[in-house]
Each structure stands twice: as structure tokens, then as C-alpha cells.
Length: 296
Image (tube, rainbow, N blue to C red):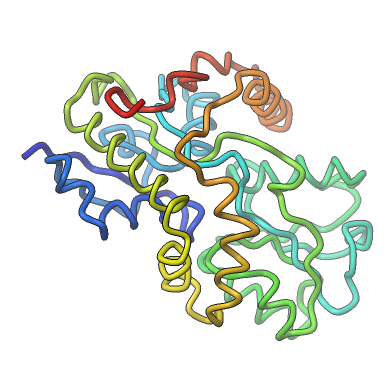
């Protein structure tokens, strides 16, 4: 049996859901590949490049900064699952002006996305509010700090459901990144220096993940069960709503990278980082190329 490492570089359903479904439904075994799902959150780019990586944002920033020739071969979604959550007094993005926002670092992919969305709302992240940089973890400390008033808002990911937290705590959901910024953001990327693009193990991984995406579309009730296993504070009807709002419409097996959308996203990220952009078609397998061979 072929073997390949697959590393996630962030936590939550945004990164973990598709690989988790493929693993739990035995799609990897069906394809004759042993996939070792690794926690690469703290790994360097040099360590990550020896396996496949789920986080395309991390791979893109590595390519922009380090020149590593990452290639994104499949994409799960182009709607990042990150949200701005305000306390009782912060009811809109405009209310963030002059406030304290807990957020990822500016050179961390979700942090870069946050800054792009802030600018879209007319806010300079370096001048108009105080960005309190923190290691995201599962965002539970952010909720605690929103309660005690040491921050006014938080930028959170998919280890929680922002609507449920807002309803329980009296907070406000300010914006979903996916409504404001599209970027092909999670899937499978490799460094061809270490994993050839025609590697049988890699191709088997891609086929299994494609089956998992099809599962999420074709079996919504079971997809909701998987989401509920990650977000276990949600009641079943809340998990279904979360699936229908954020997952079902966007995590699909027929997704194809639009090179124009991808290029706009890369240009925005590069502009935020102050580096030269790269060609979207040099990084993503655009259009017809995102589906693995044999699964058309």
C-alpha cells in the first residue's frame, strides 16, 4: 500500500472536514493509500514540503516569501471560514474603529485575509483599530476575553459556530470573510521537488478527497452529523443550519478554480504583504485541472 503524509496547518472544519470524512468513510483505504493525517500547525515550511498540505493559504504565503514551488492540485472551497465577532457594544464592522480586535498575525494567512476584509470596510488595521495578535488555538480564550472586556472583538475560525456563540453570550456576528473575500483556500498542495505530481499515492489521495466532497454534497444529513462531531455544542438543527449556510453550497466536488478570481486573490494577498505577486495558473491547477485524473 502506498503511503503519504497529509498535514493540516489550522484547526476546525475549514481545514479538517474533508480529510476527516475521507478517513472515516474509508475512502483512502479504498484507493489503496495509507494517509497519515498530521498536525502541522507548528511545522516550518521546510518540514511541511515533505508531505501534502491542506492549507493552501499557508502554501501560497510560503511560495510568495520563500520561493518554494508549491502546487495546489485540488481545492475544497474558496470561502474562508473565518468570522469577525463583536462584544455587546460592537454591532457592526464600522464599530471596530478604535476598538481592540484579537486576530491572527498579519503574515499568517487568516490574518492577511482579515486585513483585506478590514480594508474593504474602510478600516486601516494599523491605524483605525488595535489589533491584538494572538495564537488562535480553538478561540476559547477569545470568548473568555470578550466576556471579561479585555478585548472588544475577535476574529475566529471554524472550531466554533459564531452564531451560536453570539446568541449565548450576547455578542454580535459582524462579518463572514467568505462573503467578502474569495480565495481558493483549502485542498491539497505539494512541493513537486519532494512529491512528484504523478505520484500514485498523491493521485489516490486526491481521488479520495474528491469522493469526500461528493459525500458532503450528496449525503447532507450525514454531513451534518460530521459537522456536529466537530461543533458539538450545536443542537442538531443548528448544525444543519451551519452546514446549509457555510459548507453545503461551497464545499463541492465540481468546484473549479477560476483563474481570474484566483489572480485577484493572489494580488490582494501579495499587496497586503508588500511582495510581488505570482501567476495564479502557476500556483493553482486552474479550470479543468483541479479534479484528479480518473475522477472526471
